[in-house]
Amino acid sequence: MQKFYQTFFRERSLYYSTFAIQEQAVKGEWDFSLHPVYCISLLDFRLSYENISKEDYLHKVKLIETNSGKVFNDKLNFVYVEIPKFNKNLDELETNFDKWMYLLTRLEYLERLPEALQSKIFRKVMGIAEILKLEKTDRKAYEESLESRKICAGL
Image (cartoon, rainbow, N blue to C red; front, side, top):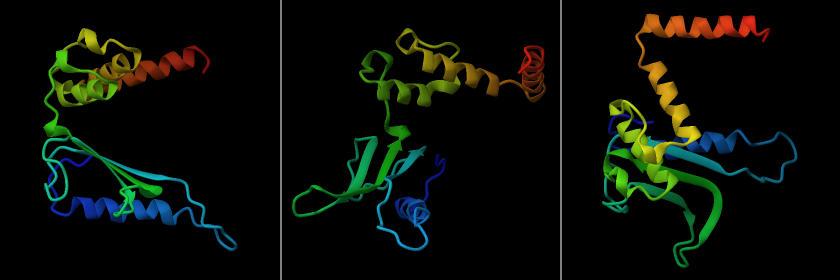
């Protein structure tokens, strides 16, 4: 999650993603087979518009062969989500991704989950958010009560 705008954020994400590739190296004989690496960036700002759509909030980037436009190598993948660009209303949500985006952009303002988000995963996220917004002393008391329940249950 990147909260504040950074001029060279795309370069920064490229730089950091290369470490995940380098860490796959094996000492000695190695065939250079790699597991795919994904750099997923949730951005609370808009990327600069050079070479990307001004309207889209989801950008999936791979290494491509420029003549054909086909994927050249699928081992390095980037996903950039420009959260401020998401502006769908509740009645416009079509996909699970839309629902996640809606929840991310409005979580701090929701008192309860809307009907469209009534699934197990979203209820769990809302429950975690409710715990995290507790005052420090209340959160500590809640966590201690969980620990005492574990002890009583013999866990």
